[in-house]
Length: 266
Image (cartoon, rainbow, N blue to C red):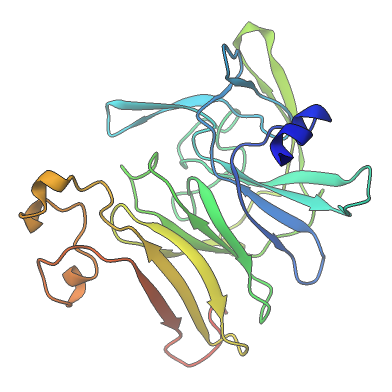
Protein backbone atom coordinates (compact mmCIF):
# COMPACT_ATOMS: atom_id res chain seq x y z
CA UNK A 1 0.00 0.00 0.00
CA UNK A 2 2.86 2.37 -0.79
CA UNK A 3 0.70 4.84 -2.71
CA UNK A 4 -1.86 5.06 0.11
CA UNK A 5 0.94 5.59 2.64
CA UNK A 6 2.45 8.33 0.47
CA UNK A 7 -0.91 10.11 0.28
CA UNK A 8 -1.23 9.90 4.07
CA UNK A 9 2.05 11.79 4.63
CA UNK A 10 1.39 14.35 1.87
CA UNK A 11 3.84 13.15 -0.78
CA UNK A 12 3.85 15.03 -4.10
CA UNK A 13 1.78 13.28 -6.78
CA UNK A 14 4.12 13.02 -9.76
CA UNK A 15 3.36 12.68 -13.49
CA UNK A 16 3.71 8.93 -14.11
CA UNK A 17 7.24 8.12 -12.87
CA UNK A 18 8.91 5.42 -14.94
CA UNK A 19 12.68 4.84 -14.95
CA UNK A 20 15.24 5.85 -12.32
CA UNK A 21 19.03 5.94 -12.54
CA UNK A 22 21.95 7.54 -10.72
CA UNK A 23 24.62 9.69 -12.39
CA UNK A 24 27.84 7.64 -12.11
CA UNK A 25 30.01 10.54 -10.91
CA UNK A 26 27.77 13.16 -9.28
CA UNK A 27 25.48 10.66 -7.55
CA UNK A 28 22.41 12.69 -8.54
CA UNK A 29 19.18 10.78 -9.07
CA UNK A 30 17.24 11.11 -12.36
CA UNK A 31 13.58 10.06 -12.73
CA UNK A 32 11.47 10.22 -15.89
CA UNK A 33 7.91 11.56 -15.63
CA UNK A 34 6.38 10.21 -18.83
CA UNK A 35 3.19 12.31 -18.95
CA UNK A 36 -0.11 12.88 -17.13
CA UNK A 37 -3.42 13.39 -18.92
CA UNK A 38 -5.05 14.49 -15.64
CA UNK A 39 -2.78 17.44 -14.79
CA UNK A 40 -4.67 20.77 -14.92
CA UNK A 41 -4.29 24.42 -13.89
CA UNK A 42 -7.97 24.34 -12.87
CA UNK A 43 -8.70 20.70 -11.99
CA UNK A 44 -12.11 19.14 -11.56
CA UNK A 45 -13.06 15.76 -10.15
CA UNK A 46 -10.03 13.49 -9.92
CA UNK A 47 -7.76 15.78 -11.96
CA UNK A 48 -4.56 17.06 -10.29
CA UNK A 49 -3.46 20.67 -9.82
CA UNK A 50 -0.16 21.83 -11.30
CA UNK A 51 2.68 22.28 -8.80
CA UNK A 52 6.37 23.17 -8.75
CA UNK A 53 7.58 19.67 -9.64
CA UNK A 54 4.82 19.10 -12.23
CA UNK A 55 4.17 22.63 -13.47
CA UNK A 56 2.75 22.19 -16.97
CA UNK A 57 -0.84 21.73 -18.11
CA UNK A 58 -1.69 22.44 -21.75
CA UNK A 59 -3.37 21.05 -24.85
CA UNK A 60 -1.72 19.66 -27.96
CA UNK A 61 -3.41 18.75 -31.25
CA UNK A 62 -2.14 15.52 -32.81
CA UNK A 63 -2.72 14.79 -36.48
CA UNK A 64 -4.94 17.83 -36.84
CA UNK A 65 -7.87 16.25 -34.97
CA UNK A 66 -6.92 14.54 -31.69
CA UNK A 67 -6.53 16.85 -28.69
CA UNK A 68 -4.29 15.71 -25.83
CA UNK A 69 -4.42 17.63 -22.56
CA UNK A 70 -2.49 17.69 -19.30
CA UNK A 71 1.28 17.30 -19.09
CA UNK A 72 1.30 15.94 -22.63
CA UNK A 73 5.03 15.56 -23.25
CA UNK A 74 6.44 14.70 -19.82
CA UNK A 75 9.67 15.76 -18.09
CA UNK A 76 12.71 14.49 -16.19
CA UNK A 77 13.28 15.41 -12.54
CA UNK A 78 16.62 15.08 -10.80
CA UNK A 79 17.50 15.09 -7.11
CA UNK A 80 20.68 15.93 -5.20
CA UNK A 81 21.61 14.65 -1.75
CA UNK A 82 18.47 12.53 -1.64
CA UNK A 83 18.82 9.70 0.90
CA UNK A 84 16.20 7.39 2.43
CA UNK A 85 16.70 8.91 5.86
CA UNK A 86 16.89 12.52 4.64
CA UNK A 87 14.22 15.09 5.37
CA UNK A 88 15.18 17.53 2.60
CA UNK A 89 16.97 17.61 -0.75
CA UNK A 90 17.66 19.85 -3.75
CA UNK A 91 16.00 19.23 -7.10
CA UNK A 92 15.17 20.67 -10.49
CA UNK A 93 13.61 19.60 -13.79
CA UNK A 94 16.47 18.48 -16.01
CA UNK A 95 14.45 18.49 -19.26
CA UNK A 96 10.89 19.24 -20.30
CA UNK A 97 9.70 17.20 -23.27
CA UNK A 98 8.09 19.43 -25.91
CA UNK A 99 7.74 20.13 -29.59
CA UNK A 100 10.34 22.66 -30.71
CA UNK A 101 7.74 25.15 -31.92
CA UNK A 102 5.57 25.14 -28.80
CA UNK A 103 5.16 28.07 -26.41
CA UNK A 104 8.52 28.69 -24.67
CA UNK A 105 6.86 30.31 -21.66
CA UNK A 106 4.45 27.47 -20.87
CA UNK A 107 5.55 24.32 -22.73
CA UNK A 108 9.04 24.30 -24.31
CA UNK A 109 10.75 25.50 -21.12
CA UNK A 110 13.98 23.68 -22.03
CA UNK A 111 14.30 25.44 -25.39
CA UNK A 112 14.42 22.23 -27.43
CA UNK A 113 15.14 22.53 -31.15
CA UNK A 114 13.94 20.47 -34.13
CA UNK A 115 17.09 18.34 -33.81
CA UNK A 116 16.48 17.30 -30.20
CA UNK A 117 12.80 17.73 -29.29
CA UNK A 118 11.05 14.71 -27.80
CA UNK A 119 7.93 13.61 -25.95
CA UNK A 120 7.13 11.21 -23.09
CA UNK A 121 10.53 10.21 -21.65
CA UNK A 122 10.28 6.68 -20.29
CA UNK A 123 13.52 4.69 -20.24
CA UNK A 124 16.57 6.42 -18.78
CA UNK A 125 20.02 4.98 -18.14
CA UNK A 126 23.59 6.17 -17.69
CA UNK A 127 26.36 4.26 -19.45
CA UNK A 128 29.19 3.58 -17.03
CA UNK A 129 31.82 3.65 -19.79
CA UNK A 130 31.37 7.35 -20.59
CA UNK A 131 28.75 8.81 -18.21
CA UNK A 132 26.28 9.70 -20.95
CA UNK A 133 22.59 9.87 -20.06
CA UNK A 134 20.38 7.97 -22.53
CA UNK A 135 16.71 8.93 -22.76
CA UNK A 136 14.11 6.68 -24.41
CA UNK A 137 10.55 7.64 -25.29
CA UNK A 138 7.19 5.87 -25.14
CA UNK A 139 4.81 8.26 -26.80
CA UNK A 140 1.66 8.68 -28.84
CA UNK A 141 1.23 12.48 -28.65
CA UNK A 142 4.20 13.23 -30.92
CA UNK A 143 3.78 10.36 -33.40
CA UNK A 144 2.27 12.73 -35.95
CA UNK A 145 5.78 14.19 -36.26
CA UNK A 146 8.24 11.40 -35.47
CA UNK A 147 8.45 7.91 -33.98
CA UNK A 148 9.68 7.08 -30.51
CA UNK A 149 13.39 7.57 -30.07
CA UNK A 150 16.63 7.34 -28.11
CA UNK A 151 18.50 10.54 -27.21
CA UNK A 152 22.02 10.95 -25.87
CA UNK A 153 22.72 13.73 -23.38
CA UNK A 154 25.50 15.22 -21.29
CA UNK A 155 23.68 16.51 -18.20
CA UNK A 156 24.97 19.20 -15.90
CA UNK A 157 24.08 19.25 -12.22
CA UNK A 158 21.10 20.16 -10.09
CA UNK A 159 20.78 23.95 -9.86
CA UNK A 160 22.70 24.76 -13.06
CA UNK A 161 19.68 26.53 -14.58
CA UNK A 162 17.14 29.02 -13.34
CA UNK A 163 13.58 29.35 -12.09
CA UNK A 164 10.54 29.97 -14.27
CA UNK A 165 7.03 31.06 -13.40
CA UNK A 166 4.18 29.69 -15.49
CA UNK A 167 1.14 31.97 -15.51
CA UNK A 168 -2.21 30.39 -16.29
CA UNK A 169 -5.63 31.93 -16.76
CA UNK A 170 -7.63 32.44 -13.59
CA UNK A 171 -4.64 33.82 -11.72
CA UNK A 172 -2.88 30.47 -11.25
CA UNK A 173 0.91 30.84 -11.20
CA UNK A 174 3.49 28.10 -10.61
CA UNK A 175 7.21 28.64 -10.09
CA UNK A 176 9.48 25.74 -10.97
CA UNK A 177 13.18 24.98 -11.23
CA UNK A 178 14.47 24.51 -14.78
CA UNK A 179 17.84 22.93 -15.54
CA UNK A 180 20.27 24.62 -17.92
CA UNK A 181 18.95 24.58 -21.48
CA UNK A 182 20.64 21.93 -23.62
CA UNK A 183 22.82 22.82 -26.57
CA UNK A 184 23.45 21.02 -29.84
CA UNK A 185 26.46 19.34 -28.21
CA UNK A 186 24.77 18.28 -24.94
CA UNK A 187 21.52 16.74 -26.27
CA UNK A 188 21.18 14.83 -29.54
CA UNK A 189 18.63 12.53 -31.12
CA UNK A 190 20.57 9.29 -31.53
CA UNK A 191 18.12 6.67 -32.82
CA UNK A 192 14.53 6.76 -34.12
CA UNK A 193 12.50 3.55 -33.93
CA UNK A 194 9.91 2.12 -36.33
CA UNK A 195 6.28 3.25 -36.38
CA UNK A 196 4.10 2.76 -33.28
CA UNK A 197 6.91 1.32 -31.18
CA UNK A 198 8.40 2.09 -27.79
CA UNK A 199 12.19 2.32 -27.46
CA UNK A 200 13.20 0.92 -24.08
CA UNK A 201 15.80 -1.04 -22.19
CA UNK A 202 19.51 -0.24 -22.52
CA UNK A 203 22.77 -1.87 -21.59
CA UNK A 204 26.33 -1.89 -22.89
CA UNK A 205 29.34 -4.16 -22.91
CA UNK A 206 31.96 -3.25 -20.27
CA UNK A 207 34.14 -1.49 -22.85
CA UNK A 208 31.22 0.64 -24.08
CA UNK A 209 31.74 -0.44 -27.69
CA UNK A 210 28.45 -2.30 -28.06
CA UNK A 211 25.02 -1.12 -26.94
CA UNK A 212 21.78 -3.07 -26.75
CA UNK A 213 18.32 -1.46 -26.89
CA UNK A 214 14.82 -2.88 -27.28
CA UNK A 215 12.13 -2.01 -29.80
CA UNK A 216 8.79 -2.97 -28.27
CA UNK A 217 5.42 -3.50 -29.98
CA UNK A 218 6.01 -1.84 -33.39
CA UNK A 219 2.72 -1.44 -35.22
CA UNK A 220 0.81 -1.74 -31.96
CA UNK A 221 -2.24 0.14 -33.28
CA UNK A 222 -2.89 -2.40 -36.05
CA UNK A 223 -6.46 -3.71 -35.63
CA UNK A 224 -7.08 -7.46 -35.70
CA UNK A 225 -9.46 -6.95 -38.60
CA UNK A 226 -6.59 -6.24 -41.04
CA UNK A 227 -4.20 -9.03 -40.00
CA UNK A 228 -4.70 -10.69 -43.39
CA UNK A 229 -3.61 -7.53 -45.24
CA UNK A 230 0.02 -6.54 -44.51
CA UNK A 231 -0.41 -3.28 -46.43
CA UNK A 232 -2.59 -2.03 -43.57
CA UNK A 233 -0.20 -2.89 -40.74
CA UNK A 234 0.94 0.05 -38.63
CA UNK A 235 4.48 -1.27 -39.15
CA UNK A 236 6.15 -4.26 -40.82
CA UNK A 237 9.42 -3.84 -38.91
CA UNK A 238 11.86 -5.52 -39.18
CA UNK A 239 10.53 -7.15 -42.36
CA UNK A 240 10.55 -3.78 -44.10
CA UNK A 241 14.33 -3.62 -43.71
CA UNK A 242 15.04 -6.91 -45.44
CA UNK A 243 13.63 -9.71 -43.28
CA UNK A 244 10.78 -11.04 -45.38
CA UNK A 245 8.62 -8.18 -46.60
CA UNK A 246 4.96 -8.44 -45.71
CA UNK A 247 5.48 -10.07 -42.33
CA UNK A 248 3.84 -9.02 -39.10
CA UNK A 249 5.88 -6.57 -36.99
CA UNK A 250 8.05 -8.07 -34.25
CA UNK A 251 9.54 -6.72 -31.05
CA UNK A 252 13.31 -7.14 -31.04
CA UNK A 253 16.64 -6.23 -29.47
CA UNK A 254 18.85 -3.95 -31.56
CA UNK A 255 22.65 -4.08 -31.33
CA UNK A 256 24.52 -0.82 -31.98
CA UNK A 257 28.25 -0.44 -32.70
CA UNK A 258 30.39 2.35 -34.19
CA UNK A 259 31.86 1.88 -37.63
CA UNK A 260 35.32 2.70 -36.28
CA UNK A 261 34.99 0.27 -33.35
CA UNK A 262 35.02 3.01 -30.72
CA UNK A 263 32.76 3.65 -27.76
CA UNK A 264 29.13 4.25 -28.66
CA UNK A 265 28.18 7.87 -28.08
CA UNK A 266 31.67 9.34 -28.35
